[in-house]
Length: 211
Ligand code: SF4
Image (cartoon, rainbow, N blue to C red; front, top):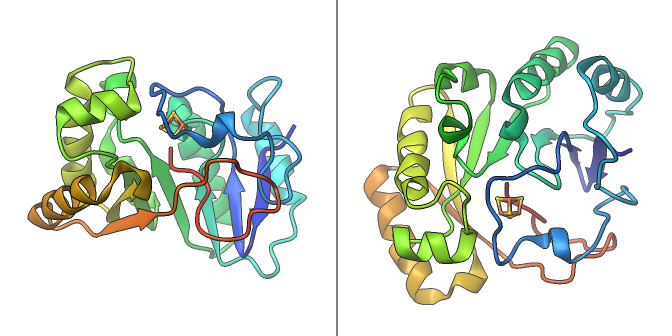
């Protein structure tokens, strides 16, 4: 069971396969493994003690950043994410990033977003420039409110840590330009990622996933 895996100089944390979205470009359908992981499919979700032990067994030499991001949306396990982040912070000085779809408030309405201040950065999948397109490409199980909730999440979390948006290039130039406008109007940097359709563990460029 792969909880941590390396890709380049990043250490990724894979805590769940659950996700409230079903993105048309989700790489989970393109392969099982990423980086040095044979498979990111979890037979069960690891507990906190297991996660800590798995982290303690990793060699951190050459690692520049820890990123919560795997074959699922990390914040499906919000409390475990927080506990794991706190543990890693207690063990090393590496910067830690959360990659998320920004829908935690729909999963856990009482979740206090100020808790995310423990992260050095939060990367949010913007994915589309309007609600209709967002629904089309991410197919969130929470439906129409999702886009507005994701944007509100970004604006709120900006109060506590560095936030950026991402889009994948397959959404097309027009959508990307509109996304740039939205990101600019909100004062959030936008990163355009290369789409990775048929992911293999030999993939060497770009980021493989946004949750
Ligand atoms: S949010 Fe991420 S994990 Fe979830 S379906 Fe979309 S790309 Fe896949």
